[in-house]
Image (cartoon, rainbow, N blue to C red; front, side, top):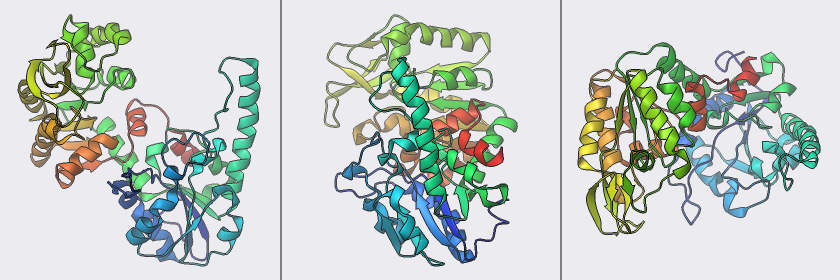
Length: 415
């Protein structure tokens, strides 16, 4: 069954979305990309004459109730986007009555799933590697099944439309699917688009293929970097990773973010890139600041000669030129992670240069896939969202899919 062929008339439909949206200090949404991404699926349920139950997580409350991460804060915004009133269930595991009372065309939003440790299925307060941990893990698995069964009991159909969490085997993303037969569970429109976009990059690579990996740490990206070395023609590594690579090559990086335990990994990446004939583009200069602040004093430094008391917060002018040169002329582009602390307006130059080069290449016929919260926030901040081919709502999920890993949230539906 696909979402296109399903008819939800007079049925209750529970949809797992990814409404883990960024909020400001007053609980207002600062980027509603993820809500807008889910609208086609949610509107299909209502247009068919079904009753809609929406579930999501927000942040990392670690199995405890945290009012700052309550989905109650976004009920109004969801209602506005959907063009329908949205009821709120303040306890996702005790929403039986609210779900049962729903009439066709009505909408119920459940409270943050991760207020329950059963959602993620990780034992709480027990040390890993102990006999107690093994016993707690086994018990938690059973509790997770019960939690998923409760969520499933609210509805006749289950739709998985949260690509951002598809790489997690959580109660609401994978386990719940066990309680629906093949005709009553399916991927939503957003998931279908995401899967197609990833297939486009992986099985239909037009060359040159350029990947841009940013962000602060080598450790969180090493799996995807190693995987990409066997696929890409150009690999741009930027952001905080720059300084781990600079240090590994004997440079001085001042107070910049740097993973001293990953210097050998950085050298290994350089070696493998050479062996695979990959053009590895690293930042050669940076905009250094004397404090981690938008108002800090700044100066241009070589990435491997940053004085004490200074830290690299953005790619420098020479690095930007090198990044743009590698991107232009590409036919397939993957961008995950910014080139600097783009949240500070005075340190957006590197990320903006990448975004503009990607937009230019796209205008000349490249397929560009932007993935991960920060990269998405970048293209939105710079007004480039309509100038790239596809914006993915998933960071970790996108990277794992490109690594070739099976995503539990997809496997649970497709088998």
